[in-house]
Each structure stands twice: as C-alpha cells, then as structure tokens.
Image 1 (cartoon, rainbow, N blue to C red):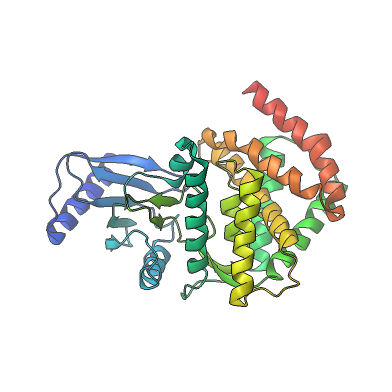
Image 2 (cartoon, one colour):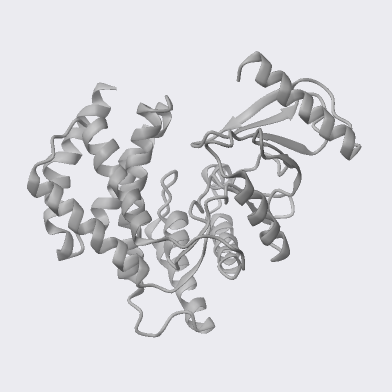
Length: 338
C-alpha cells in the first residue's frame, strides 16, 4: 500500500477500535498474506483480539465473505466474526483466531494418532459445512472448465513454454468437458472451494475454525474432501487418506446423500484431477503475474496427484502420455534450473 492508503486504513482501524471500545496499542503491521490479494494486520503491542483485513474490492468479494460468515455462524461453524466493514475500500475488522494453522499442527506433530484425530475433526466439520444454507452461486460447467483452462494457459504455455499441438489441445478440451460433466453428476452441496490445511485454524480447546470461504459455491459433494485429503501443501499417508475418505462416504450413505451404487472412488479421483489441473495453473499464475514464486514449490506434489489418478483410468490414456513425455520432464528441468 502507498502512504496515503496505509494511513487511511490505519485510521479506519483505530476508529473501529474506538467504536467497539477495544483497547489496542502499537503500529498496525501486516503479519500474513495468502494466494489472494488480501493482506492481514494486527496492532503490534496489543491487538485487542482483532485482525484487520485489507481486501481490494476490485479483486476480492468482501460482501460474499460477510454474508457467508453470517450463515456459518448461524450453523454453529466457527469462523472469523465480522465486527466491522467498509465495502467501498475493502476494509474488514474480524475476530482474531490466532496463529495455529492446521498445516503447522500436522507438520510438527509426530503423534500419528493425534494427526488422525485432527483429520477426523476436519472431516466432521466438513460434513457440517455441507448442510449450511446460504445464497451462493452454483458451480457451473462453464466455471469448472474455466478453472481447468488455467492449466494450459498459465502452467503449460506461460510457465513451461510448451507449444501445444492441435491433438494435445483437442485432448485437453475433451478431458475438461468430461471432468466438468463428472463433477456435476454428483450430489450438489455447500462447497468451501478451498478446504485445506492453510484455511483451517486450531484453537486451544481442540476445535476448528475455517477461513477464506468467500468463494463458496453449491457444487460437487467430493470437492472439499479432495481439497483436504489431496492437499497441495502436505502429504497424507495413503492409509489415512483411504480411512478418512471411507468414513466420509459412510456418513453420506447413512444420511441418504449418496446411493449405495455411487462410484465414490472414481468420482473422488476425477474431482481431484479437475482441482489439481486448476491448482497447477494457479501456482504458475501466482509466480508469473503476482510475483509469488514460493507456490512453485508445491507443483511437484500437484503433478504427483495428477499422475497417480490419470494413470488409473483409460479415459485419460492420451493425457497421461502427454504428462509423462512432455509435462513432467519440462517441469523437472525448470525446477532444476531454479
């Protein structure tokens, strides 16, 4: 932010604290950013239990964040409580959830039973989330395909400089269409759309809160499960992934959301392919457009997920060959140069 914008934001934050009768002290300092355009701030000496968010309104959907936060609160799902906002400037004041990211907990905890408990906690919160009632858009076929187009535009063409032949373009177009249809051929529920270890916070009382939910949609029942269990930021053991996915499936069967003949593993894998095509494209865009190269370190995991799924199904044989012969070698070469 420029000096004027920074001062304006700081003065607004102090005004809100005064209105809320919250004592704060020190300078308003940034402590976190993410893959979006949002930036997060606390007062340095005494934060007053508040986090201030600067989210440019031309880039971020702040009104959806406030509306969805209210719906989550009504459903007794923990999330930041919105204390004040200014939509014109993209300013928000929200309750401070602390610094204990789910990711940090599972990365540093050597107790496998506790990690399993954390994932079961996250699965149970996800099951609650899917029942939330809120006016949000549907995840359309057009939107699903637009997300996958990020893969060839940003990852293949701009990041790896691969020249796509007509045959490859046709293959990509066909699998994008196929994956979008497969996604919509599932029960449609409330979808966070980024339900992973960086968007879950852990409290001292061993409860979870979720953040970054402003892009929620009504979409495929397996979408958020894929985001959690095939997380771009951390590896799960295959046994833990299977057990948590099976627990999720059994609960949905009991609730009548899934039929007994629903091909769960296949739909889960197909949803994962869709999401990881999108993620590879987003990580490349974050590097090239937004100057955030750290996200490239997650690309090998994303490609690993892609390979492990597409090689299981004959529908993706041509795409799998393209991954093996062109994408993987180009990506490895790029990383070795870096």
